[in-house]
Amino acid sequence: MADIRNDQYLHRPGAGRGAITPADPFEVLLHSGGQPISGTNRLPVEATLSGSLETELFPRAVRRGTASSPLLSLRPHPGIKGVRIAAIVSGMTGSFASDEGWMLRVLTTSSGDTAMPLRRILDIQTSRYTQNGVAVVTIYPGAVPIEEHLSFAFREEIAIPTPASGNFRAILDIQGTFADGEGIDSEVIVHWLY
Image 1 (cartoon, helix red, strand yellow):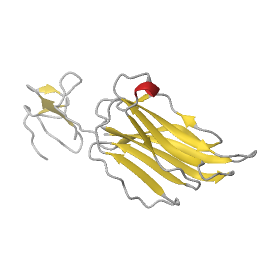
Image 2 (cartoon, rainbow, N blue to C red):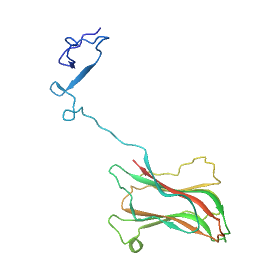
Image 3 (cartoon, helix red, strand yellow):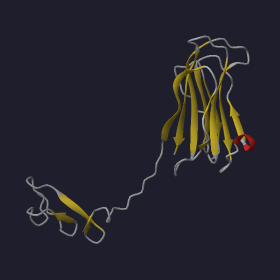
């Protein structure tokens, strides 16, 4: 078997001087002045997050009226650079006039603004629909609409190519006439983007 120098590895008692054998194959790596790696003597490690963290803002349910989220931070965790808010409608029953149906609205404010209706800086609205589909608003540096082939009648995405900052409120705006048992089968999901 291989012979390992003791200044690189700390061997277990009874293993012999640095020997790795089939009977005793485990050695402990030393770091920083020959001390074993531990909670206080750690290897230098850097990590960069990428991807997204998903949050269910409005769970899937049949809705008969508008749903509005509380005021949320656009950057709730360090390292988050943006947000993608997706309204997904999987089924609809009811009667809809020409100006009715559903749409996704996202209102944003500057940092620290809690009087949202008085000081909103951006009111992003998708088109209003009377069919199943997906409407997405993305706020992210360099954001562009993503062309995905989903099993929905349509997908609309509005991309705002700017860093996310401040606060936002998501609104699933639902207008129509609904009898008992009718409504819009919908959900809203937020993807925090790293």
